[in-house]
Length: 210
Length: 264
Image (cartoon, rainbow over all chains, first blue to last red):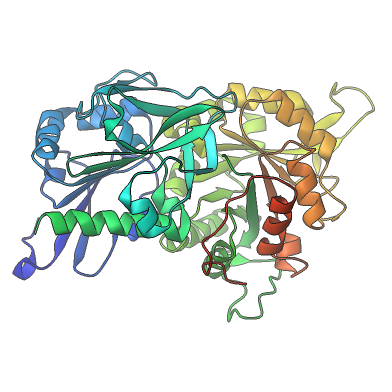
């Protein structure tokens, strides 16, 4: 919790729900003059310039870990705190999930439901289609790595900037609202283009706060 | 469209890759971190580290390797070999694995798969099954589960066991034909197809790859979602790029890398 020296070091915080591998995500976020902090307290995690909700674990457990600071976190994102939600982290932006009980942040209206595919989990590289998201072209991102059985169903598709299809079920690959970006794929596991995507999100987030 | 995957497996012992890997351009051909990165840059879709010693000492070293790898590898990493408990899995995931494969320990105590899926999610849990052809009766499908690296037969039918693994929580099946492993005469297509048709999760076929046509056959006729390759790449018989070109030419959906990104 040290102050940024000379105001130069920028803080990016990964909220840790307690399970899984955060190494690759932390490394993808890293850059010069960027301090990567891993924080287990959701209220403390808001003391940052970019909040990252990572993509490992189950919805109920993630919702439980957010519970004590859910309103504060939603409020911070509504007031423009940049946020990147990956996989489960994207799903937690919504109201709730059929995967299990618990409340998401409720930042984006809609629920998370099971994919309509015979072969689940949806594991592997799939193509991002119908992408209007400006970053897709900028970083040449086309094939991304997925590992999930549930997907977000926003009430308004206005927030969706890219889609992916599995066995005919079209689900949001990227959602954007204010300074929040949610991605259902794992950019930190989507090789060089995925890492470029993460770095572009970091760049935009920190730029937005200058 | 969901791509068919090409997964590269490296056998690791005491933190080193044990089978020779012939990359002339690499200074240290035994370093798993460097090799995993090299395969990523060639276009591999995933990497598996298989701890073949599976001793406590080797495991500790492997976790250190996983940590270093996760910081430099930006495709999924699976760790397997000698995983006994949920705590072993937690350690591997914390160290940097995205998925953990379980073999003999799940055969001995199938509830391990459920405990793991409940804690980490099914997408982290890979059930690794070693199977051998056995038509003498006793296993209805004609394939028997073997453990301890294929040395010890069990009473289990390989196709039934795959279905049970999925019911208990496994998110993928890594299916190795012990009969074909290392022989380079092609994957066991009927075995792979029998399992792929029985289970609802992705199936990774392993054992027997001799060249591009074998990889294409197991992903096509064999109905596998992914093909695991090891020796033919490490020995320089072929390359990731050649295999993926062949997959694409065969009409299989593959992940293509950006022009200029792939190193040959």
